[in-house]
Length: 433
Image (cartoon, rainbow, N blue to C red; front, side, top):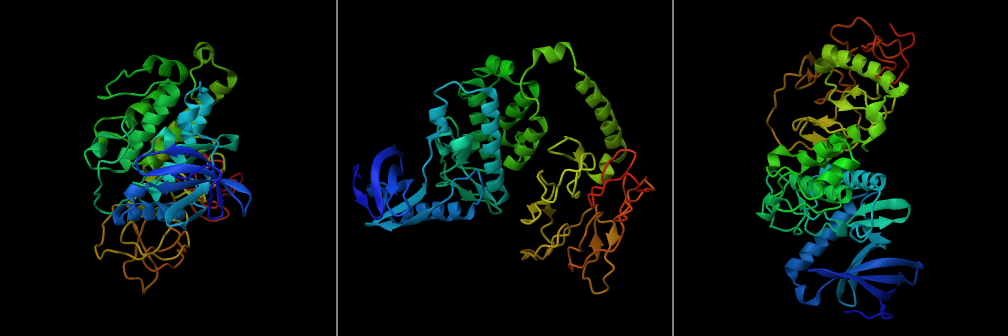
């Protein structure tokens, strides 16, 4: 144990913040940089080859994850014979904050931040395995950061993990030693439920759970439905990962609160939106399947496809895809989906990928051929910009089946009877024919 006012390398110990099963966390002053930090130090009796490997893994994972809602790693090294992980010092944890009343909008804001953090980790094939209020730290301006990847597992083709986690927040299958991305989804749902309902759900997680009436009085049925799906006992019934859960959350985020007046009288703006919804419903019926518009714009909630660079309804930028993908892996540059046998991203001109399989995966979406005579495969899907096999730029002007219209700027197919912008080149469609 370190004592207050004790010198520890360049750090001056101020107080002990917390103590867990693996380590003690101290608040300390960095005498060189002049800032306060948190020092995480493993218990002396646990310092062996296996535990040190765990802490080294945590340090390496933290160093790889660069996201505004994931606690960054400042430093990791041995000081006076002790292994230390140094991070920024938070104001408090979400567990501390939950000891007082939490406004609905604050809970929603915290929910979105932790979903974005988990989605970022899942995109990089990292499962946290211990999402709970103690591991969600609060910083100024209500910024929430996810921390403690100490028992995280990097997901490969198969997952082997212990029954790690925290009682009350761990998913049933994880407690049995079979963690997955869906296990983190369960833990996220538990934390969201506690923030919004004011109660911690208990085994066997049957509905209605404790606090259900309060939950229904604070948020609308869409949020309740999202929580029910994330807390399904059968993991196969939950969201596939935090990315999918985040996409669903963003679609229903506004409005989330129950508004009794809105049920009695609909304002003029709502009536206008109903006409817009009918128009979008007609579009989905006629073109949704062929264009694959399974996502929603984060700004206007209009239906969009993963391949689109802009929302065709409001023009919002989609250079980086914010939605979940139907493909097995992501391009780290544009966040659009890839098939495992593609050596290049067909949506952006990113670097190549090392293909780990010699298997060729068929797909009904292959409907065209690459014009490069030296291309080995030649198969293309609609709206690809580059060949996924040879990386050459595709000169083809992609059209939309059932529409004669094209964008004047890029020549690709558009639907001016529905859209205000070209989703392929972001041009406004006023004069496109």
